[in-house]
Length: 335
Image (cartoon, helix red, strand yellow):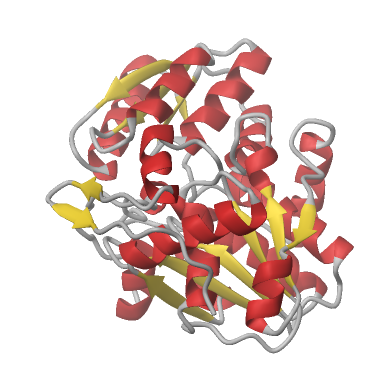
């Protein structure tokens, strides 16, 4: 069953005091540039450095009579599940593909979870997670297609609308759709007229392509500065696809060069260290792909990134992504 606003309100009680109440702060630079107040929801301030802790805490709290928990992850969901499982004394096995950055793998191991590297795609990691369910009795927690996870992520929408009921637009990073579905459900339940835009990178945007096709589709997974947005949505997707289809007003794609530039802007103008996935909302505004008509917020989803690569970006150096090079350029304030 699809989650409801009541489920999100219940999730808010589960995560209270651990993963809630992250700051919502204005960006003076982006507000001036966009001509509308522009707010940043700082989920990079979570204990694990990413918003995924909300959904993981809510989902793991509901697990009963299992040998442990497992999931497939591009990094941050796995970190959230590892954290939540450790708090409950449960075994956690996190399955990831070879494309996941080493810093995210090491962060999960540091939380006491087992890590299983399987293949070169999220689908490969998912298959391994499902094997562990069948053969070892673990409980699988989907990173996006799980009602408890979606409800947990939806608490971000509750907090944003509680602080700013006058908000006109929400710009939400879009991957498997758990965040976008939960936030849109919360926001539109409170204010049906609010505009919610899902934003992803143009290299392997599974939900965007699925929404265009009218059904879940497979996409090739490619290295990206927004690696947290990689992976498929599952061909048997039950929840996040129909919710994104029904609740998102539009979806927008940005390029690697635009993500690179937005990471520079967020760092140099707002002094915030954040993953490439976090800045897709800024990138869409900076490049004119989204026009703003009133107060707007975006979610800075996490900070778990390779600091060597981040340093190259903020100092204007080239960055290599597989067989593609994102050309560097020194930061210059956009006009």
